[in-house]
Length: 218
Image 1 (spheres, helix red, strand yellow):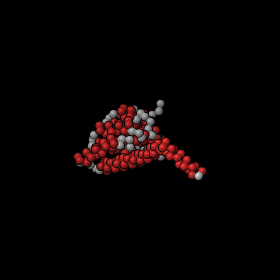
Image 2 (cartoon, helix red, strand yellow; image 1 turned 30 degrees about the vertical axis):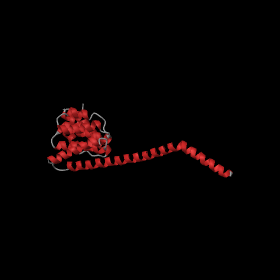
Image 3 (cartoon, one colour; image 1 turned 120 degrees about the vertical axis):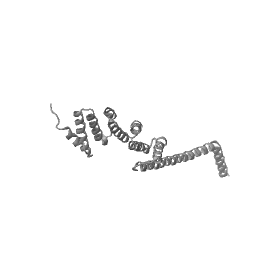
Image 4 (tube, rainbow, N blue to C red; image 1 turned 90 degrees about the horizontal axis):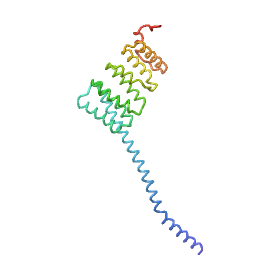
């Protein structure tokens, strides 16, 4: 009998404990399940967004690789670039899309649109290498537009080391365009030294130095 009373007391105690704590346990379990479901849903959403961005970028890459685009294809390329920027702005594909957008604009002879795309990437991008690449291409556009001072200003920042030699070469081109032959010489010599250090050959820089003639001494 004593054992039965003990079991009954334990049962009553369990009932009281459940009455006091059961609701919070159920709520906690529900919240945990909701958290797991929410995290999984968020992960699925992110994966879907990444896949959509990848597909749109591939479509834009295919279009930009064609020799020429008709009106409809050009509009499609513009729409893809806009969608990448607006819907996937923080992704790698959005930054790469801006570079392709600039390439297409240059091919169309629209230097203003090309500069806008490159300036946007250089200013707002989150990836230093692609920002630096945008600055190099922007500086070349500015040089082609006979604005060497703007090109120098564009490159008046430190760029990732793999781009340093190209930066020095373009700076040399800009100095020569401004008539400063010695500054051009120094920049091109720096470009050659950087390219040798990084084992990234720069073709044509030595020819530019040769065209300057023998370095003047004082």
